[in-house]
Amino acid sequence: MRNSPHVLGIVLAGGEGKRLMPLTADRAKPAVPFGGAYRLIDFVLSNMVNAGYMRICVLTQYKSHSLDRHITTTWRMSAMVGDYVTPVPAQQRLGPRWYTGSADAIFQSLNLVYDEKPDIVCVFGADNIYRMDPRQMVQQHIEGGAGVTVAGIRMPRKEASAFGIIETAPDGRGIKAFLEKPADPPGIPGSPDESYVSMGNYVFSTDALIETLKVDAGDEGSVHDMGGNIIPMMTEKGMAQVYDFADNDVPGATDRDRGYWRDVGTIDAYHDAHMDLVNVHPVFNLYNRQWPILGHLPPLPPAKFVLSGNSHESMVGAGSIIAGAHVRDSVLGYDVHVNEGTFVEGTVINPGTRIGRGAVIRNAVIDKYCEISDGAQIGVDLEQDRARGFTISDGGIVVLGKGTRV
Image (cartoon, rainbow, N blue to C red; front, side, top):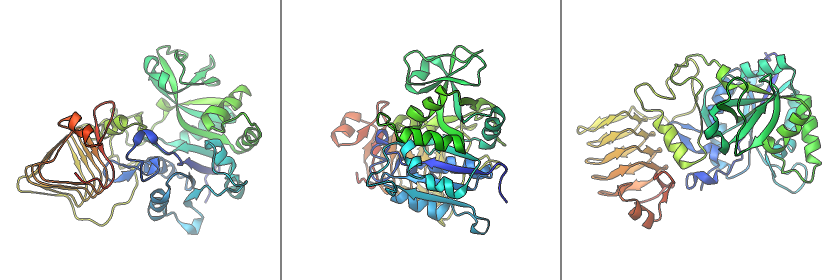
């Protein structure tokens, strides 16, 4: 039975994620592991599926194999009622060229829209950590009669200049201008010390989306970007409105994690978002079963702590073994083994990694399937880490790429 209105979800998942290197050396950014049990893309897909939007196309391009495999093996909808979450690779449907921008990706994939015949198209990004009920945004879009509704998150003006900014009309709802990283971001009517930062989530009336994409495709001066071209074009026509993310009410949200949104576009942001998970009262609560983050885990036994191994203010995934090691303020994915005498602090360890005896690891991100030998030190001497060729973020986080041996 179709939702009313009929909604098609399009997730833009072709991002290269250069600022997350080396985590994106072997995979697309939306496929980067997160929280010990998920991929980044699982958050947007969970939001759509929890809302009952069960027909979703994921547009991929860059190093998409692991992302495609994750979607096809994890996100299986009921074929009986026509639901699907399907990866859609770049297909050169309009000639011998790949996607040249996010708007071009949708333009080249308009056959998906024509086939589904939706009333509303939700175009969401694939890279952010948050919970959101998109039904509430869709409802405002319909009531407001806009061609496009852009989700905006409130941010202090002094911190907002690094993002795309939504300048609203005096009524606080219509969009007056869409500004890319302005030096002096405009305030929000009634709250002059805050600015609206675009979340990269858009709700379109289908006809308005198709018409605007066609005009943009014929503009040789356009870079064919959703935020850079499509939204400004619709704003100039008076067709755009903002949706205040602070108004979104997600079932099971706590006062502490209500309205949480994190752009994990850099290593430091990725690391910080993990640290938000491990407090007694987490800044972002993965344990909200009323609006679960969905994913897939291999069949593994529970985590095991032996030889006085212990963890404090940490998350440890299924199948992991902490054997006489000490883990603090860290997130360990599934099937991670940490051996006797090793100390781990402030670190993200992705699945399948093995750590020997007597090692010390501080303030690091360790990707999947790494092997760290007895007595190794990571994050203790940054100059030594840099000399060994490890990536070190601006904030001093040491990063080991997938399969690294130390």
